[in-house]
Amino acid sequence: MSKIYTKTGDNSVTSLLGKRVKKDCLEIGTLGDIDELNASLGVLNAQINVGDFKKIMGQIVDIQNNLFIIGSNVAAVGEEIKNIPKLNEQSLIDLEDWIDAMEKDLPPLHNFILPGGSSAATQSFLARAVCRRAERNFVSLSEKYNKIDPLMKKYLNRLSDYLFVLARFLNKKNGLEEILWGNKY
Image: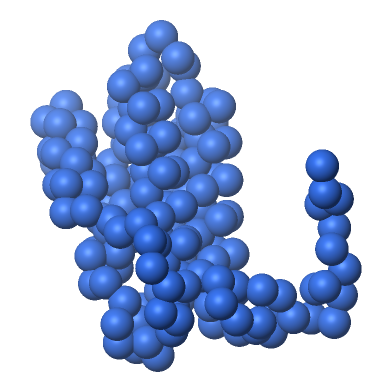
């Protein structure tokens, strides 16, 4: 087994698929945000009650796999590399279907709400914030490289919606009321 450390990044450069880049470049920043989002989703799945939310845990694993697809495309951006997996339209449709199913069980929202509630809901709110940062960097990356599949940008946008609705859903299922912005606890 090879060692985990290579020492090739000690001078602030690293390898992406097909090229060496500075560790503070836009591509690495975007990959870092996607990795952080994926790790946040892993924490979220660890906090969800398996018995009651097994279906949601499966959704999160599907999302994590899709984030690896997006990350591999970011790593290959600007290079002519074959066999990079592509995100499919069904992944976006799945997010929308999952959002719609959860929203059927939620009251309409007429005010801003404060992020919080159960530990799983709070983690979902946090993952949403990370997702929105990843999306912002992805937008910048797609402006730098015009060949990026726009479906990935749509997916990240919809994913932040999913995580917001999921947080609300988890709080409702755990019997916790939402705290409206401006209200006291």
